[in-house]
Amino acid sequence: MIIDILTIFPGMMAGPLQESIIGKAIARELIEVHVTNIRDYASDPHRTTDDRPFGGGSGMVMKPEPLAAAIASVRAADPSVRVILLSPQGRIFKQEIAFELSRLSHLCLVCGRYEGVDERTRNYYVDDEISIGDYVLTGGELPALIVLDAVARLVPGVLGSDESIAEESFVGGLLEYPHYTRPEIFEGHRVPEILLSGNHAAIRRWRRQQSLLRTQQRRPDLLKEEILSSEDRQLLAEAIQERED
Image (cartoon, rainbow, N blue to C red):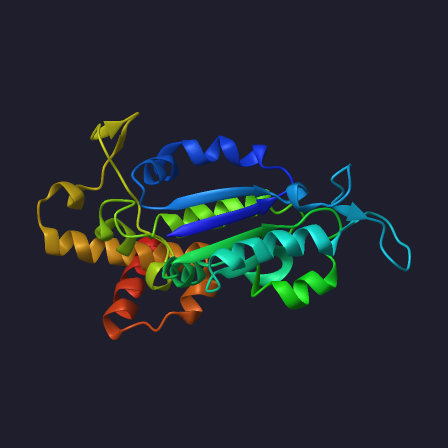
């Protein structure tokens, strides 16, 4: 998978792209990431990428010419590339969107700045817009890294195991169950006995129950969207009753 990132601050990408899972995936050539400085496509000696908004108002707006030229350069190399603007006006990024994007062969993430991009760039050069949440950041670089991380780890071979992906939070509409590791007793708190039982069927049942309970307690909005089986409803009822007792 190829991922292009268009930004006026390419230095913000250097560290994250060299570390952890993403860095290893790039080194193993499972993903290919190109970072482009939008300023390289500015035509004036000062490499200007922003200007004052028509009609007045505070802040600056990203000029259409450099950004459009940078996007056009990526499209010229691959017309099938999907161009996404990181924007607070975009659809909220969720795991299902990460899965959707991970199936693409080429993705281009455009990092907005200032008050945003010229509307003509948005209308004629961008395929989609994504927001990582209802809050304001100084630019699209951090959101682009978040989308990159969420998408790249779904590319086959990046994590090395599809099993861990299948059990993660938001996969299937639920939060993930609690995890424990050694030591068995930590500061007087013991690991749940069922996890030490060796009974894999009982462990799977407990984990499903804990996922249901945790989702009901922390993200009931997700549970409303989940289509629960009769067994799920029974597991959740039992868990709630145990809590009350």
